[in-house]
Image (cartoon, rainbow, N blue to C red; front, side, top):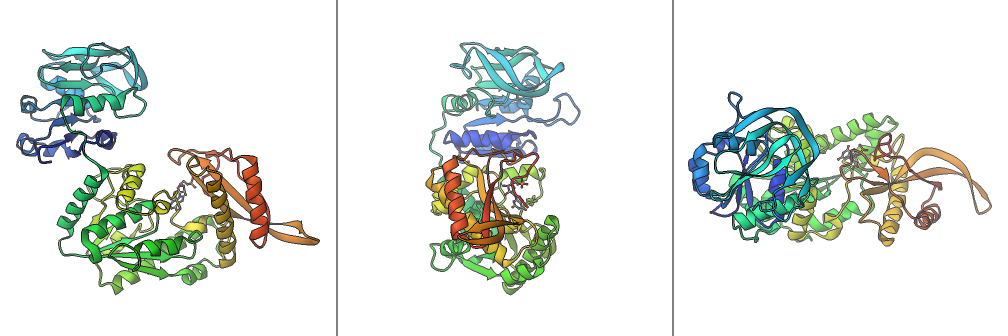
Amino acid sequence: MNGKGILIIDFGGQYDQLIARRVRECGVYSEIIDYDRAELARIMELAPEGLIFTGGPRSVYEAGAPSVDPGVFDLGIPVLGICYGAQLMAYLLGGSIEHAPLSEYGRTSVSVEEDSELLRDADRLNTCWMSHTDYISSAPEGFRITARSGSCPVAAMEDTGRRLYAVQFHPEVSHTDHGSEFIGRFVSGICGCARDWKMDSFAEEQIEKIREKVGDGRVLLALSGGVDSSVAAALLSRAIGSRLSCVFVDHGLMRKGEADEIEAVFGKDGPYDLDFRRVDASERFFSQLTGVSEPEAKRRIIGEQFIRVFEEEAELLGKPEFLAQGTIYPDVIESGRGKSAVIKSHHNVGGLPERMRFRAIIEPLSTLFKDEVRQLGRELGLPESLVSRQPFPGPGLGVRIVGAVTPEKAGIVREADAIFREEIKKAGLDGSISQYYAALTNTKTVGVKGDFRTYEYAVALRAVITSDFMTAAAADIPWEVLQRVMTRIVNEVGNVNRVFYDITSKPPGTVEIQ
Ligand code: XMP
């Protein structure tokens, strides 16, 4: 840390990375360290400008509960304790902690003292996010109570002389009014951190870490062409150049122009000095998928073939020692946390690490959120079309063709999808819709074109608004845009005579139509 930034001591809370993110948003460097590695000597060596204690699931008075050396409060470094971190601060300094008769979860009103150094300028009655069962029943000597809630007599406290601050609520979550401001006030106003950290600093730090870990070894990256693996490729390429091999498996189920675009960026004519291998495996995928209609069976076949192709390529490359993945923080949360490497369940390379015995896995984006990954991609010079790409499932168009997959159907859905995407973009709606695409239903119906009867496919358009893809609502696309898309699809794409717009929410529908 070289005496700069905020050290976040992790007691196992749910929102630790969100705290780090909020600090980064202030333009200040932060590092997270497990509480059991945060010995006093280590903290002094790192010499942060401020410390934040995170939340955590335990009770401070339980045997073996996570703790720190109380000497930390005498180092003269400002400390902000959040939730469990607040209780720990109170407990270690002589305050008392009790099991609350009533837990507080979710939105809670707190009344704030006007002259609080940390919370000043907040509304007197502030809405914040609580998630706790224990609470501070009396503040330690020297502390002033600066906020209270209905069932929490010490919702915030501070000892400005010693620069110690504690909040029972979570300022890092967006539901807490002024939460980011409180964190900003702590890091800049109280700790005096300069707001000069940028995403390019993150890139530099990661590049150093990658070089240290890989030494003169070689790294294999499965490049799907999605935002995360593309940003990981750009970062790794900066770190180790041609000792990175990127294997891009074209399964014949990519969107229109996508495979060529990926090759243009990462291939020999692109700006990166890396060993890029595009494997055209479409025939193999289509032949394995022949006659298979059941969606899970299709996914299994695509996943298995993917691994086969990848294994063959790794063999040709002489089995590199390291596997890199574009895992991002939400994937880590979804897969459950742990000290071992976590492999994202949705990921194309699922199953590979176990089968191929890599020496280690490298996941340079595992602390970032999606929008931060996009920001990093821009810093690294990736084209906007790649960086702002919407999510695309690993099995590709294979999960957007209802029923059996054939090259002909893939061609139809690819063209229809390109038209839909083009028109949404032209209408200026691409920034406000979370995911949109065309799918091919397994339905053929009678229609009329010119003076002829037709018996052709129906295309379904899907566009959803969602923040986390767990629930979603159909987007309210203007009628004239839908009309334009329909006219172009039935005129320009062969073998289609109907276009449906799917208005189903999730649940009960899913985002993908398969
Ligand atoms: P569903 O259809 O489950 O989709 O509502 C939610 C989000 O996940 C994406 N998705 C996948 N991504 N491999 C992936 O990498 C998959 O097998 C897969 N299935 C769904 C989907 O595009 C949406 O963003």
